[in-house]
Length: 203
Image 1 (cartoon, rainbow, N blue to C red):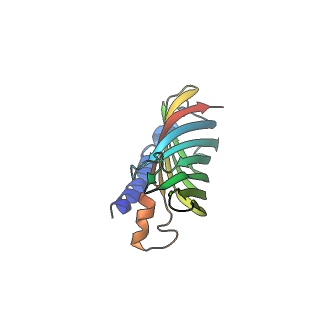
Image 2 (spheres, one colour; image 1 turned 60 degrees about the horizontal axis):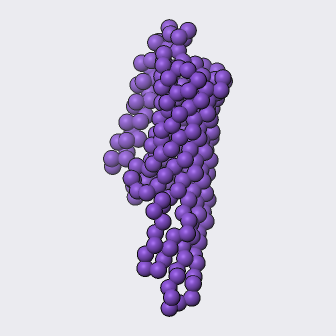
Image 3 (cartoon, rainbow, N blue to C red; image 1 turned 90 degrees about the vertical axis):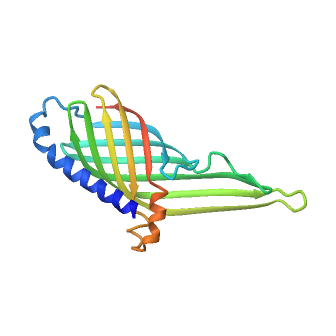
């Protein structure tokens, strides 16, 4: 239930802030921090606060005012402290995500707020090996490819070539795109991502 409130809160903030800043952005167009193309590497975590580490890059292009196009790539180490328990060792466990999105950006004097609808794919693979001296060595591995839909909020702070960037990604898979079963929300909540980094203004 709390994830439903989080999603609703995200929509309310996006719509309220966008409408409230509409006049201000128009009047201050000559002094806002306009960025046409940026590259924003960062690191992050999932909000289940496990042992995941995310290495991400957001490339954002604003071809015209209020229109933003983006590409988000991430390499996720799903278990930094590889498991070794009862003769079972995790050899690797990682995911690769690639998403593309479209949305809008509200510019201020030194900050900008971007809201994006993202869609892409997620590739996950892991392998575990049983090394018991009394048994033959056995290895099991799994590979999967799944859709990745969601909403992304990106904050940029600074007006020169380099700036601080922070992002939050709220997935819409498996709930509600896969189905309306409320138990699917657990999958969403485990993949909410928080990211921070330094962005570079290309033009």
